Length: 68
Image 1: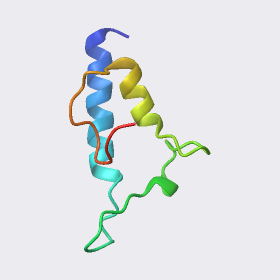
Image 2 (image 1 turned 135 degrees about the vertical axis):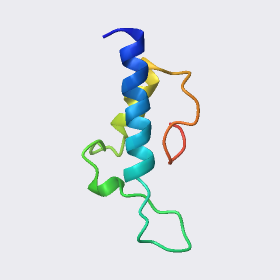
Image 3 (image 1 turned 30 degrees about the vertical axis):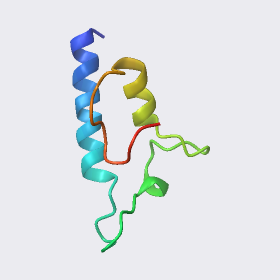
Image 4 (image 1 turned 60 degrees about the vertical axis):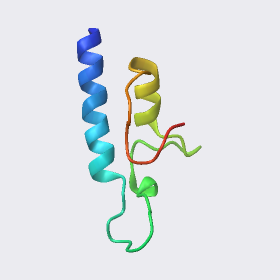
C-alpha cells in the first residue's frame, strides 16, 4: 500500500462515515448509527477512526462524529 493508496482509503472511509453514521431518521437531535455498524468494536471503538489515525493522522475533518 503506498501513501497515495492510504490517503485514498481514508478519503473513502470519510465518505462512508459522512454517509452512513448519522441517523437521519432522528429529527431535532444528532444521533449516530454506531450500534448497527460493523466497524464498531465491542468496546465501542470506531475502526474507521483507528484506520485513519494509523495511516493518515493529518487528514482534516474526518467523519461526522468527531475525533478519538
